[in-house]
Amino acid sequence: MDIGTIMNTMRDAAGIPAPPAIFQALMLLTWVFHIAFVHMTLGAAGIALWSFWHRNRSPFHARLSSAMTQAAKVGVSLLIVLGVAPLLFTQVIYDPQWYTSNVLSARWAIGFIFSLIVAYCLWFAFYSVNHAEDHETAAATLPKSRALIWLGALALALFALDGLIMHVLSVQAIQPDRWMQWYAPDGVVDTSGSKLHTLQPGRYLTIMGLALPAAGLFLLAYADYFSVRRDVDAAYLAWVRQLAKPLAWKGLLWVAVLFLGWQLENWHHGDLLTHPVGWLFWLSLLGAAGWIRGLSRPEGHGYTALGIGVSILALLAIWREVIRIAYLAPFSYSAGQYTVHADWPSLALFALTILGIGGLVGGFYLRLLYQAGRTQGVYQASPGVARLGSAAVGVLAVWITVFFAYGIGIYVNNVFR
Image (cartoon, rainbow, N blue to C red; front, side, top):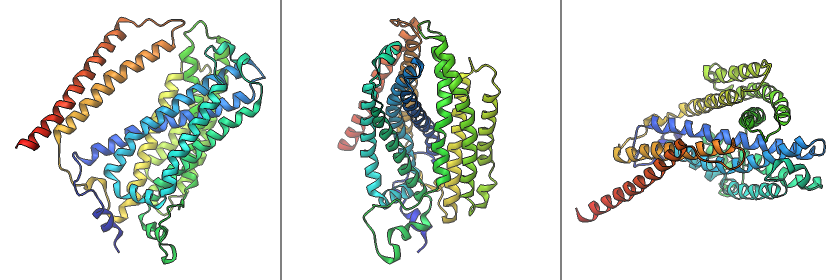
């Protein structure tokens, strides 16, 4: 049995509507945004629990815990929404691998959804008891019992489990030479889908470990974001920066150590051990750690640090794709060989949707939320934001009209031709 032939036969016979490189690039780009919110959420949740446990030491702990609890709550929503796009692009060009992996561990793939729902409900329950509209009163309104921390701790543990499930599904997908061994161990077919068949601890710990420096980078940007508000205590922001700086640079160094373990897992792919992208990712961790550690005053560098963090994630996304290509190359499978049946009208509609809806509507919401959060009291939109809002409503009306006109046109053409 030739596995490569089987995988290429399993490709969608209908092909894809555009060159594979487009979907490959979009898969990497959207994964960066998804994983950024994964790390932000895990890091913020960890800080929220730590600060909640120590909230009696100072009002700053209670205030930070309340703020990070809210950040993690919003982060879960965003990581779920932003996780749809890279998953769909993966299913377009790596459909044989992804679907096979999900079938081999079907119960875990389905259980992922339910565990994520339970985790979010638990975190929302923790949020309900660790939330104050006015952070100045957070210390006074927080419940006294530390037992409530277990709501959040269990939610964070389930988030980590969900990360493990996605990790295993991804690793199983790039090891087709072991599929039959997992499907029929010792010649006995196992259709239960109840097992997670493989694990690469170095890879999992490296990617999940990035939540630690992500928490520090996020706190640096958080402090800069609120520094313009007079109702936010400058001493509190200074305390946040004092906490964030070592968390960021020490976390980056720790991830750099974990990455060496990930590299050892690729020993049977010698080209990966010397591939420049992997070592560029490693050097970026060390370089970012050194830069942050060398900052005498972290004030004003929060957004820069956050941008560096996103750049590191971009290298990570490319590195994951390099690994996938290397693992599948021996089986003569390449996304670039996918049959293309160009559908330029649909591709144009897709691109205009991204630019119009994502650019104008998304840009309007981002600018509105950014300015509103930095405003003390009631926020009054500036003329620029108001014009952007009007443009966003207009482009939505145009998009809806074009969408239905396009669909109706195709329907009429198919029925009456």
